[in-house]
Image (cartoon, rainbow, N blue to C red; front, side, top):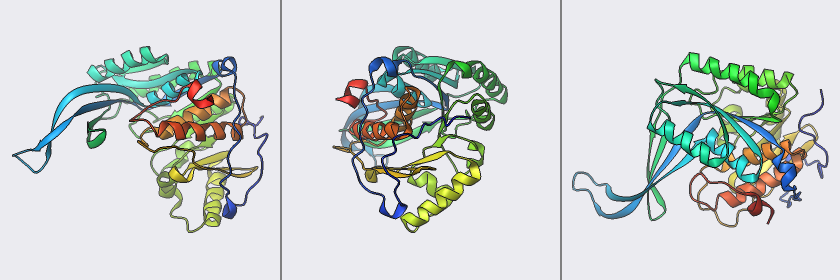
Length: 335
């Protein structure tokens, strides 16, 4: 089976202890080439709802601020935000997920229609569509309230059957796990994609990564990786732990996102570190969605993994300068 990530052009192999802070070369991808990339996003979707208002007094009932809400904004969250990011870059993106027959579910359907994402939705009448409600004042988040439960087994089986139908029509499969139950059958999906020679990218959640066995690329942040391999004491220790993890679970590569420290790629061909390029950090929510969506879009367009990582790192530096779950478009990325 050919290597689905194409590791050509890795500029240098780096020992973990000397992970350098070099600038990554950026490959400019023609719009038409990127437009031919077909990404299937599978996972947990949610509605990110924002209430904006002013705080001018403290409640007489408790020592908490009173927010006079003046504006509401809804955005696609979770796997839906990942798919929206891929489309914003110019790629084609399909979204396989479960939503409820409720107001936030209908709102997600409406926003998907406006976003250009191709929806492949399973509807569960008993599911409360996940909402993350954020209350903000003067661009500062004061409170987040979550509404959620898990989809029914029958709906998830229908989603697995739909996955079989969609697999041949896509170049890259992206699993976006938010631990809401939408990826109950992720192990079977990865096996099916592997058999079809399609690369599988996983944004993980929780400490059970056995379920992601055989994934082509997994993209944890520091906290997520620490939950699985424990606290590392040095870069050499980190390399040893990641190498052991990759061997045990058959991951071709692991991309560790390290916030202000950039990101580090661990692969058979070596280790590569990309320095953070953020001009201003305003809000990191959704940055992981942008990273993995950019990786999938660029791999679908035929770039090597190293080239895709360089562009994903640049995209992350742009999106953290925006409020909430946001996207990076083609012109921003390549300007």
